[in-house]
Image 1: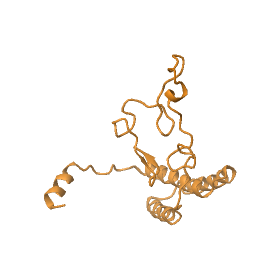
Image 2: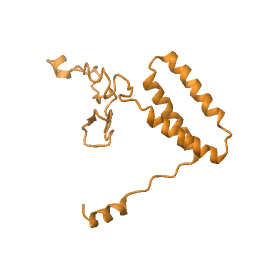
Image 3: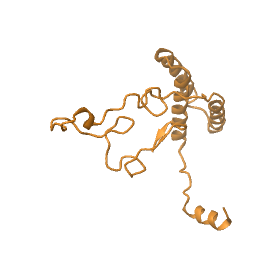
Image 4: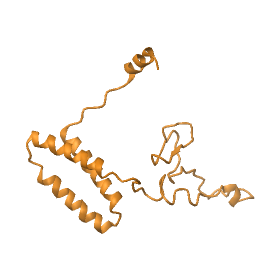
Length: 153
């Protein structure tokens, strides 16, 4: 891109919101829990690891601001070090083993003589949630599944 396009784009690009310390710690804790669940899928073991993780966070609750900065940097580097190559996702969601395994048949196939009035004729998205007008970001009525990021737009 040339300089004119970069300048035009910079005018409309929003700065990342400044998070409070509490919000940063909450996001870090949640990321750590998700990462732990990727490595330890057994629920019993996960609960033990989550309790251990919580005690680590609680033990540093009253740390000084300088110590908090150092602890946050250490925690982020530890998160990056232990990233899972294939994060756990719910089997029915994009990237899961059961995603669209048994999609519903069209009602015209089930009822060749016409769909009875008492049959629920709702349309569903690939994550089995009822379709709503403008439900996903695309707004065109189509759902795009990105298997590399394991999400839908």
